[in-house]
Every structure is written in C-alpha cells, then in structure tokens.
Image (cartoon, rainbow, N blue to C red; front, top):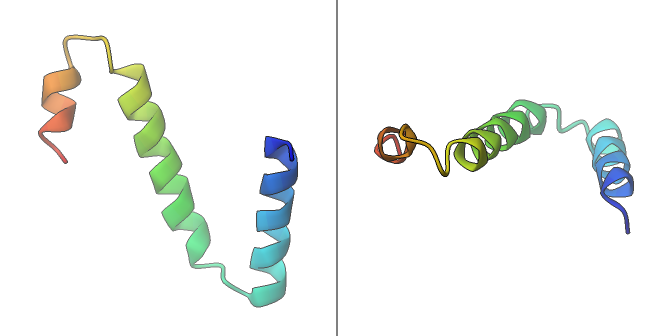
Length: 52
C-alpha cells in the first residue's frame, strides 16, 4: 500500500464514521513529528526534547 492510499482510506474513515475530532489530533502529531525530525541534528534539539 502506498502512503497516499493510507491517507485516502483514513479520510474515508473520518467521513463515514463522523470522527472529525481525530483530524486535529493527527495534524498536531504530524507537526510535532516533523519538528523533531528537522531539529534532530541542530543546536535546538536539547531544548525541543525538554518539552516532552
């Protein structure tokens, strides 16, 4: 399965089951993951990890 099909399936799940409250939670989790990945090798990393 490609990543795009997983996203499409998740979107269908949200539409059918009316679980719209999951959208912002997943969005925030993706943003935090991107933040951790981008700051992994930088001087900011120790400050980011103290938030968690």
